[in-house]
Length: 329
Ligand SMILES: [Zn+2]
Image 1: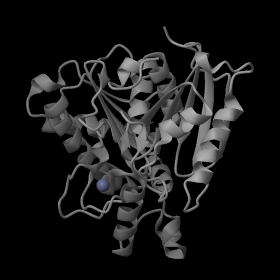
Image 2 (image 1 turned 60 degrees about the horizontal axis):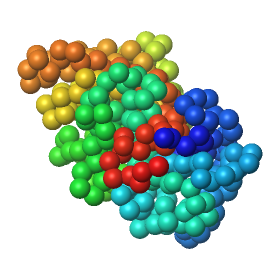
Image 3 (image 1 turned 180 degrees about the vertical axis):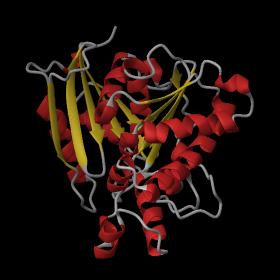
């Protein structure tokens, strides 16, 4: 029997967000947002997480009635409740987050990778409803991944799966934020698209963004490229098509490995909408190993937007079996 109150925390490199949910209602009863402290010490970040939880506690907090799910980026050991490392938060390493939170709040506490939580959110309340096998990609500043197989997260032996953004798609490709080379994230994340645009503009390509580039190259962002593509800028459209081609080949590989019913694409890069989705669908159809992988397959946009991680936290609190190895509520 699920506990009546669920608290979801989304710990990002920039913001800490928390929300209180009652029952299965995905509209939070309370929510809060603060800045993630950037310090070499772990203590201020832990305090900030505790503060966010405190902000959204139910009016009469009986912690026996509360579950807490915390999502963080990067490798997380959900079995031991440990954050192993996190991009953009150097001090966030080998951190026993669940034990620390339990000392403050003796509730039921789950720790998860943020993209895995977002995948659970889409499965339970978003674009994945009714499916049992999903590949989820969050295309943003980085690329997060979540794979749901047989209705539950695919985690692997240490709980570290499924970091789809860090699969090598071009061994001679650019360096990834993780330090390796040619990963999907280094080719199809927002910063990767902007970096490629700047390289092409530096090489003399013409675009409606050329003037902006000449005044300050760093002002050319993925958001502006998306705007220019929507307005018909041929340079930006080519860039989007090239990004779609990379993603289509990768998704075709995912079909062969996971045989999903749905591939759900979220994150800020999906502001491109059909400009990105249409060529991805076409490319996947061209690259799939066999037509049978395309039968009953839907490739679609995520539905939960920025709240996918928080709503995924709610989904996990309501149904801990979604993340195998989690403590039973
Ligand atoms: Zn990487």
